[in-house]
Image 1 (cartoon, one colour):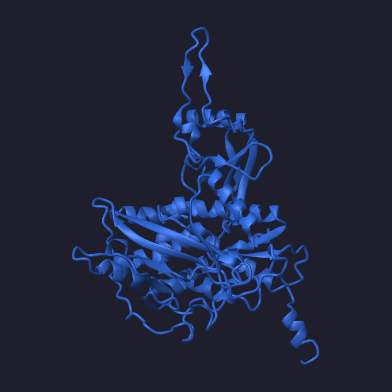
Image 2 (cartoon, helix red, strand yellow; image 1 turned 90 degrees about the horizontal axis):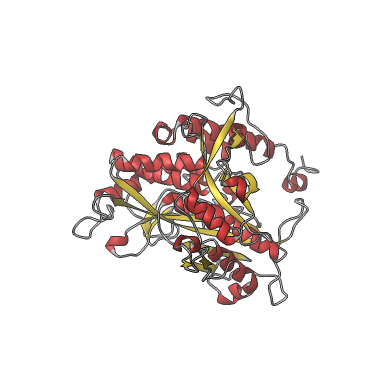
Length: 477
C-alpha cells in the first residue's frame, strides 16, 4: 500500500498535489471516478465482483482493475441464482419455472462496498454487486433485492429498521473426508479444545494468532467488530457487530464469513457456520437485534413518549410470534439446521417472548428506553444474512400493519416446552409457501424460487444413507 502521505508534484511548477482524502477510505467510494483513483493509489491489480446467491455463497467474476473501470458490462446467467447448495437445480412447478432462454442478469457494482482483499498475495479488491434485468428492473428473487424490498415496505410507512447481528461459528480440524465426524481443533496449548468454555478468555487465547488475523483482515476492509467471545461449544466463537442499516450489516456478515474462513485456512483450520457441526455440542446461531426508527423524528418507535413500551413494540412481537414459524426456512435453511432446534438445548423451540430470557425465541434485552429492541434468537448461522434479516423484519412489519397482539411474556424456562416451530425442512417449506402475508412482502418470484430450491436440497439429502441407519437398521429390521 502506498505511504500515508503520498504526494505528487505537478509538472513544471514543483507544487505539491494533496492526496484526496477518499483514497484512504478502507471501504467504499462515491462514484467511478473516485473508484479509479482509489484503485490506482493502492496499486490494485484484480477486482472480485461478487454477489450472494440463495445460500449466501459469493458468486461473480474476477477481472483486471483497468477493465473494471472501463465501463465493462458484467453479467451472470440467471440460473446461478436458482442453484441448490449441492450445485443442482430444482424441478419446475408450484409457481417456479426456469426462464426459457436462461438469459443473463446484469451485475451492477455497489461502489460503497469496494474494499481491499487483505488475504490475497497480489493486490486485490472486491465489490458487492446488485442484480438487474437487461432493461434495468431489479431481479426480485436475489437475496440483496429481497431485503431491499422489505426495507421499501418499511420506507413507505416512514420507518427504518436498525439491526445488529451476532454470528456464532466453530473452528474445527481440517477434515478432507466428509465421512468422518468433525473434531475440535488443537489450540496453542497443544491439546484439543474442550466444551464448556463460555466467555472464557483462556479459550479465546488458545487461538490468539488466528483471531489476530481475523481482526487484521477485518480492519483492512473497514469492517467493525464490536466484541468477540468464546461460546459454550468446543472451539465455538461469536462475533458481535455494531448496529446499523440492514443492507450494510448483511453485507458485513456476508464478507465476515469469507474473512473468517480465510483466516482459519491460513492456520490450517476450518471455520464452519453449520448450524450443528459436532454431535453433542451446542448449535451455532445468528441472533438478530432489531429496532425501528421513525424517519422524520429519528425516534425509536418501540418506545412511547413517556419511556414505556409502545403499541408498535408489542405488535412487532405479535407479528414475529405469528409468522416466524412460516418464515423459519429463511432462518433455518438446511436439514442440519433443525438439529440445532431441539428441546433443552441453547436454542429456541417456541415462539415465546420474555424480558432478558434466553430460553425464548424473542428476547427483550435490558436497555434504556431509547435502545429498546427485540432479539430474534431463532436464526442459525448457516442462514443467508440477507434472507434472515428480510424474513425477520417482514414478520415484525406484518404485526405492526395488522396490530397483532402478542402472548404474555414468559419469565421461566421455555425451551423444554412443546415445540411449536416446524420440525423439519419440508414442513417449513410448506408453511412458507402458504403464508400469503409473507408472500406479499417478499414477492412471488422469491417465494417460489426459494421453496423449489429447498425441496430439491431435501431430495438430495434423502439419497444419503446415514451412520444411524447402518447402526440400528442393518441387522435389526
